[in-house]
Length: 284
Image (cartoon, rainbow, N blue to C red; front, side, top):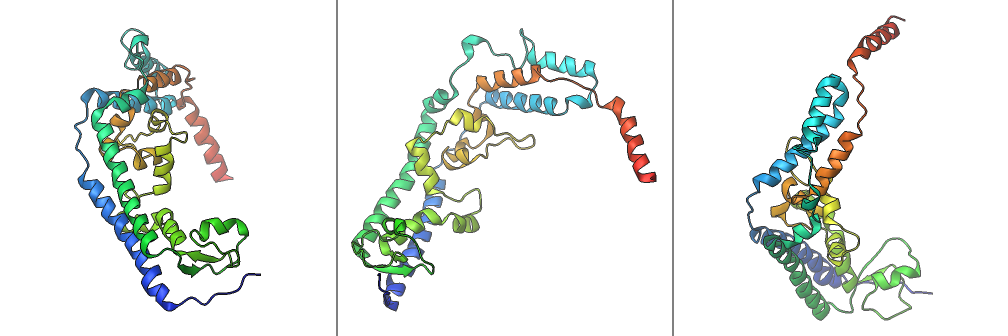
């Protein structure tokens, strides 16, 4: 049976607290460094126009039943006409949006800068923790855990007799590395909070498709892309609707297909019956 350990208060003062404070300061410093390394991009008018067309088409689909049938048909022809419709894309112009995004040298440079701003501080910090704080038992979790948590909480301690609830200094570093997003969201704001776990998964390519992730982001009032993928992995200079679409002709075609299958049913003739039903409920 594992025995209880008495942790020295000096470990708290010279290992636990300094390590936590340094991790927070490094995260804040990394945010401001990456902010200085951003490159400003002038949006392409053609890309912005395509984004606005898609937003207008989606608004038409959402409010189709509130306009007369003739007006809806004329607007649908205006968007989906096979000759000069705004959503019509010839077959020869359909390209892979993901390939277009990665073919932009400015975007590749911004991605490299952002990845370096994450990898270099983490490498230096881990070397510092491994050199000065290796082998310390820094904290204890106030509830029991199973043996499966030993490799995660006691990294650097090769003692099977120590209770699983004790946390080594190296494991405390990793817990701070992947668990400070909530604190960064309070300090820097929700949109600026860094999530190293998500970034590492996206850098490794675990099922993230930029063309699919960013093609679903839009806002009718302010054109921007605010999905988790775009906010965490795409450089900040590309956090807008037009750059996320990146001349995504596939999105234009999908919106055209969605507009073609809309079944119009004008809601105005039914308003009298609805008003009558509401009045009857109120008078009863």
